[in-house]
Each structure stands twice: as structure tokens, then as C-alpha cells.
Image (cartoon, rainbow, N blue to C red; front, side):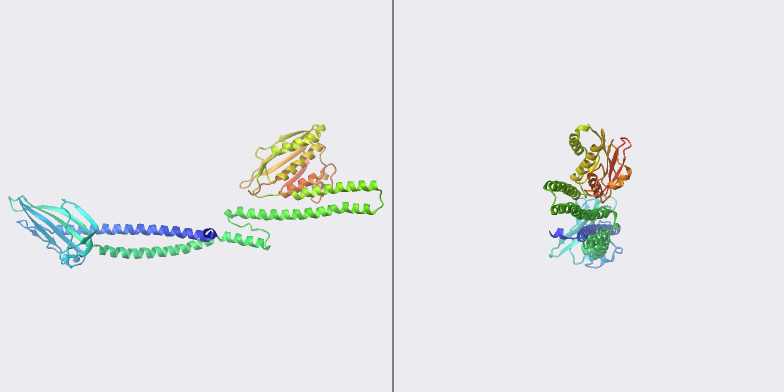
Length: 475
């Protein structure tokens, strides 16, 4: 639960910090390992140069005896006892069946016991370390060692059987490299630590800047909730535009629904005033019972029609976000089958020209009201033919729109009656001759879906043509 409570800023900062620590840790380890390998490689080269310098200065006398190096040491530390840099020569002189061992150590080895050289291997150069060695006095030390084994043949004429085999070793205490590594690691981790702090600061600033649009969305939403603003602004990054558009569409949809409910109640109350007033006046008069009964029956029928109409208007759902697309053909077939039974004597033929991909994104009740009222009106006034057609309206990045057309071969609607027929203020008790309140319901449904209803003459059938256009919307 604690993880879920973290803000987006905290989550991204934590993830970036962990990734940064892992990256810098791996980088530090890799650099430390590379530096140690480089230091050991440099040490190897340096010790090998010491060996070459000493071997070039080693010689044997005419009797096979060792002549120690006489020239100046390649490094002054070889002359300083306990300096940590030591040279050692150990070998064997062979003359016939006789052999004698010999050896030499640099002055720096005075007072120190060096490890014995490795077994003799001709022309073998071997670098080892760090090696741990404990001398006979119990003193422990750690060294890097480079050794080279050589054979010397020589002596007086006729004494070619004399051979000297020896191994030259150079030792350096690990303290020298350890000090270099310590200095390097201190500098490395100090630099990486400073880099980590700077990168975290930069990361915090980048996160703060990149999340600024989200904070602005939150502030705008809070202003909408408090009633300071009517809707979200339209200036947001591309990634947030679907979110803000959906919120604005939801706000508009809710306000339209609330306004529609208020208007429906107001219209219902207003529409019932007249029938109720008529009933009250007739009850207060001395009209005969039969006349009063007929009047009551007429006014009750009128009020029933008004209530049915206003309830139909109030039930109109309108534009919905994320609505399930409804297939049109099967629902239209059910309505047409029912209308054919009602108008069986007219022998009206209903033809379909439907786009298989066309869908209605909204409430099923709205689709049934839309199809039912348009088709019923067409069946009522058609002579023989009614045509229902649909097609998709595609807009990239949005759900598809719908164009629904109903045509008949009836007498049509006079052009001067169209504006009055579709006027917003038409109520249940206001009729256009020949066309019932169903068209007013259609107009209300179309407006609820931000669409348009056009009425004109059918170019093919010659009667009325009703075209409903519902534009593409948010997914």
C-alpha cells in the first residue's frame, strides 16, 4: 500500500535513483577493475625491465663462479634495505658430475627473508601476485614477483661441459600498488558521488519540468470542481490531449444531461397546465355528465401523449464516452417487421442499403427511438417504397461517425414547413400537419449526440428524405 501511495514524481525519482546508483556502481567497479589491471600490467613491464637490466649485468668467471651485478641498480630502492623492491638470483653450476649452488640478493633484501624461486623452466618468464609469504621468524608479507630462468654455458677451452642454470627474480611489495589503488579509488568514488548528486539534482529538475503539464491539469480540474472554470483548457501536450478532451466531453455531457432533465420537467409542467386548467373549468361548470365524461377522456388522452413524449425526451441518453458500438441492421429489421404488420394494407416495401462497418455509438434506446420514429413516419406517408441507408464517417484518431438516411416516395414535406417542423421549441401538443411528435423526439436525440438532422426531397423517390449525421467523437 505504501508503494501505491507514492506520487508519480516520487516513483520516477526513486526509479531514476536506483537506476543511477546501479549504473554508477557498475561503472565504478569496471573502472576500478580496469585500473587494477593497468597497474599490474605496468608493474609487470617495470619488473621485467629490472630483470633485463640485471641479467645483462650478470657474468661468470673462468671457473664458473658468479660475478654479481656491478653496475648501478636500475632503481635506487634496490640499494635501500626494506624498501619493498628486491632482486634475487638463485642457480646451480654444473661441471661434469659435480654441481654447486650459488645465489645473490640485492642490498634492499638485507634483514628480509625472500620466498624461494619457482622451479627452473628454461627461458620462462612468469609474473605472479599478490603472493603471501611467511618467513622463518613468522613475519608475513605479500609480494608481486616476476621470474626468468636462463642457462649460461662457458669456461676455458676444452671445458665445454660447464653449465650454469639460474633464475632471476624481482619482488615488489603490494603496498606500492595498494597505495595507488587507494588514491585512485578515493578520487574515483568522490567523482562518481559528486556526479550522482549532480545527476539526481538534474533528474529532479527534469522530472519537475516534465510533470508540470500534469500538475497544470490537476489545477485546472480543481478549478472546474470548485466552479471557477467551466472546462479544461485546450493547450496541453499531445500525450495529454485525449485525457483533457475526454474530461471536457464528460463535463459537457453531464451539463447537457442536467439541462435536459431540467427542461423536460419544466416542459412537462408547462404542457400539463392547459389540460388541467380545462378539467378544472369543466368541473366547476354545470356541463352534462356525458359531455363532462367526453371532455375528461379527451384531456386524459392528451395528458398521456404529453407525458409519453416528455418521458421519451428525458430518456434520451445522448453523447457517451467509451460507448459500445451498436450494430444497426438487426435492430432495423425488427422495427421494419413490426411496421409491415401495422401497415400491411399498404404493401410498403422497405429496402436496406447499409454499410456493414456502420455503428451507432450510444444507448440502444436512443437508436431504437431514432430508427423507430423515422421509419414509422416513412411508412405512414410512403406509397410503396421506403429506403434506409447508412454509411461510416471516418476521422483519424477518433471513433467513427454515422450518416443515417430514411427516404420515402410519399408526398414529401413542403419547404416552408421544414423549419417549423424541426424548431427547438416544438412540444407534444404542437403538430406539423401530417407528421407527429416523433420527429421532435428524433431532433432531440440528434442534438443530444451533437449531430444534425436535415429534411429535404429524396432525389430518387421524390418524397421526404431525413438525413441524420452524427459526427466522429472521442473513443
